[in-house]
Length: 152
Image 1 (cartoon, rainbow, N blue to C red):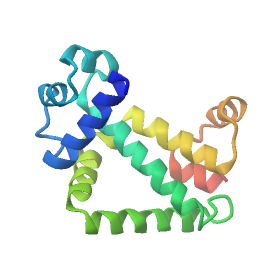
Image 2 (spheres, rainbow, N blue to C red; image 1 turned 180 degrees about the vertical axis):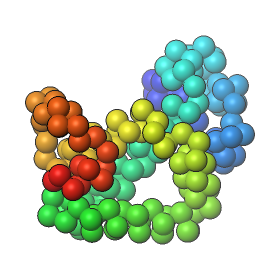
Image 3 (spheres, one colour; image 1 turned 45 degrees about the horizontal axis):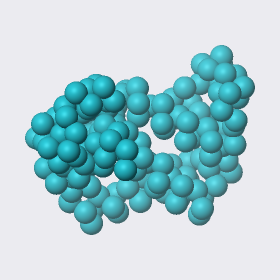
Image 4 (cartoon, rainbow, N blue to C red; image 1 turned 30 degrees about the horizontal axis):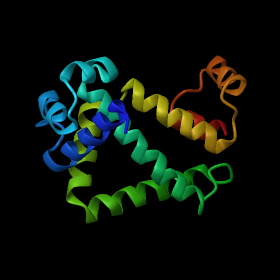
């Protein structure tokens, strides 16, 4: 496993076990067997790792929901079903609930890495190609999820 991926996986374990606020770069470095310099090199801060983990969770859950509710045909039902699944996961897994709460409160709301991953995933599910369609959407100013769903 590559050191970048190992750092991310070890941070994920620590975030879920201890909470985002109580994890330090030293803890991640010790568990991953990498030095703190590599964490700074790849991610700059632990918030970036947490944001990527949260975006990864979103992508996995939204892919599952998309098998039942087509985002193109009914975007609002898709969003409601997605929130329902997140609620059920967080209800049954205390560590997931703590991670979700801390991640949303601390980093996800407006965090660049999370926003980018959310936008890329939403656009892919709607059937847009990466280059030209994303450029066209940027030109129209449609960037957040509610505008994106209303526009689709």
